[in-house]
Image 1 (cartoon, rainbow, N blue to C red):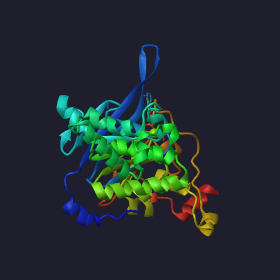
Image 2: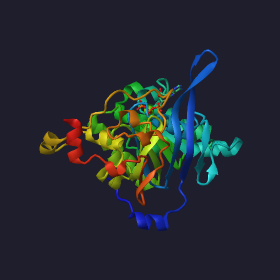
Image 3: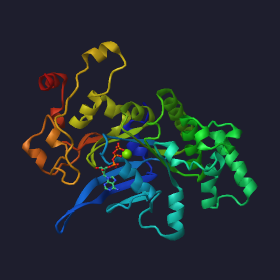
Image 4: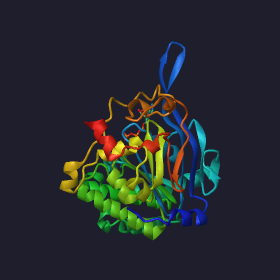
Length: 348
Ligand SMILES: Nc1ncnc2c1ncn2[C@@H]1O[C@H](COP(=O)(O)OP(=O)(O)OP(=O)(O)O)[C@@H](O)[C@H]1O
Ligand SMILES: [Mg+2]
């Protein structure tokens, strides 16, 4: 868990965020039935901000719209509506040189370094590519020197430059991907399940590397993961998504100590406890049924069809309920949250 100034102090001193995402919607064309086209509601009305030098964790089950949201920031998908500002500049409206410069400042590291690295390129050529594309340094010798520096920065020995992906371990490949992202000298790095494909011990090494790089270089991260423990370890703040929508947001400390949305509570109740005694008494909130289709999401709270606390009012549009200065949940029943007693009655 990473420390953050008290909410009040944060409120008073909060600078303009590095990244500001407002009301982002991404809809993909779905199947056509007759003359009617359906739409996959992959991200709906998603808003969040990230302060410079901080990490925002984005967590939720498969299909909740995490990658879609990340991809909308890096230009891999075109949002249907909404705005994205980097340092006050409108990323989606930018054109030409300004657009290229904004794109350079937002880098991405994917889940599977094996499929995201070109098998015919050496690690050195992979890391040099952004330097060439963005014409970052004048000469070949200087670019090669920078490649060596970047490999060293991510903990790889100089000989790695001449190696191909198949000659490297999973952890080494992910280090190459991180060096490639750093080559463009970005402000923000979108890390989409960047440690998910790795063994647990390698995962921990890569997370520590990312945290050290953040401290050294003042980087800002959007850390996307379905792994609640990894998100807790990496993030200052957290956003929880379900079926394309925000469910809850808050500082990591607050959200993990007092999850307010029944969906967050259900997610957290599914994580095994490292302490065997606590694990023996752990009570899971079992959600009934599968998530609804994103082609036809429920009205109001999209979680209501699986929520143990759902009531008639949940079919109406849900305003965010503020729990503290720094913590909000899109749930009208947060006062009814699942106390251990209530849970016992629901589960047994
Ligand atoms: N190009 C696309 N065309 C149509 N539907 C898409 C496309 N990309 C994503 N989707 C759909 O959008 C929804 C959100 O997908 P997304 O990949 O963003 O979820 P995710 O939270 O990243 O899931 P995971 O944890 O599995 O990576 C899903 O229902 C997915 O099937
Ligand atoms: Mg994804």
